[in-house]
Image (cartoon, rainbow, N blue to C red; front, side, top):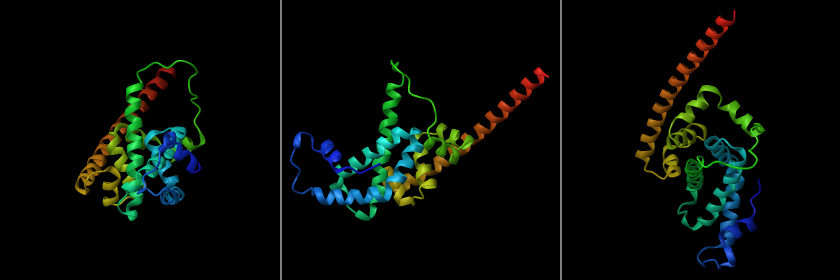
Length: 208
């Protein structure tokens, strides 16, 4: 994945619209290019875990950096850039999830997308496999995001609040609810696994 300034300019400045004098193109590009070099892999990993689609995660990673470039003048403290970037990626992910909830009931025509798992997905599934991955998919999206950011991306409470766009207190409350939801979802997965094993045993018994 490559940070392409020309691509960003086309998306941000359609029709050759002049840039505001207060918005320094070169400074913004250098800043976001550095962010891209430092954080592209972790932003991609976060979006991959949220969306479970490698190609989509790659596209939305680019989109997140496009939005960061466009919103450069909105970043008040450069030292908060990582949390600010995650906030942008978080919104990109939620926007896509909401859009897919709207369109998933519309029948598709033409060729179906391949169902063969990619190398990226196999790696992701190896790290978040079985009951844990299924449990994460059971809990609400904002709670899942809070858990991923806090537990897998090592965000502090203040960073988590900034990434989610909420207060520190609200972020802590959301994370507490997320952990409880995950505990309940894991318990439900355990029950489902036990039932599945019981069904298999009963089937084996009928065949013997």
